[in-house]
Image (spheres, one colour):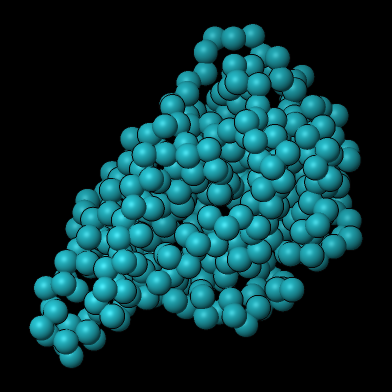
Length: 375
């Protein structure tokens, strides 16, 4: 068993080393003073987001990009609050083009249906997706345009961070999000993209249509981002890129309760388990086994005192490696975190991973007032 733990931790260590190296391979990008050339259709599905839409609309109104070169397409997904009224009121006094359309459900995935419907109603060549609970930087479209002009991609994935008021639950989600961003950017640097986030994602409409959009995975409720990424990197392996820029960071609201945190992660697990790539599956299993090990080590320390030092060493290695992986993101996202604040998050993360793994076996979860069952 000792040898098995050694092999497991060695594999995890080397995997994280590659993630760190891959992260460093992706260069920082800043927008230059170039003439805007790209036209964008910004797609925003929403359901019962009355509390969040004012902040989103405020940041949309502050975008530093020619108003004639982008449009906003809001897709109402059966909202039961005043979200639609908020959008309608904004349309009347907006300085740029805003469309409000209704979602047409044709699959088991409301969000994929909403995005597909928006693309049918879009006028411009580039589709950019974000979420209604997000806030956008003022140079968001400007830096996308500059990156597109310089690199000629067909899909551009951008960084996302969870806001935090410093509470334990929100700090946990922010650090968890930063770790996911490290894996995302690191995998791009290794030329094998594994993750992206639909809250900050752009792709050319013709590329979306060429890979048949969400066809083939719209029976899975989530995954409007990851499954499309898989299709795009298979069809256009050199033209799927990551925009590593402070000017492109989208911030999103954290969940307020642990129940919602778990449901959200079960939702994420429902899509990652259906990914076709072997690397993502192996990495997922490795992460699960590592976190399970962290939880059982205290019991081994009690009943196997001869190897107490070994268990303590492996636990310390995991914590330090995880901190290094998260810490490399601090310069990009302008965040600070001490090692001592990070330490208790290790065990909370391990507990969440275990609970989510068990919960995902049931195949059921709730999200935004709806219940879903994994196929």
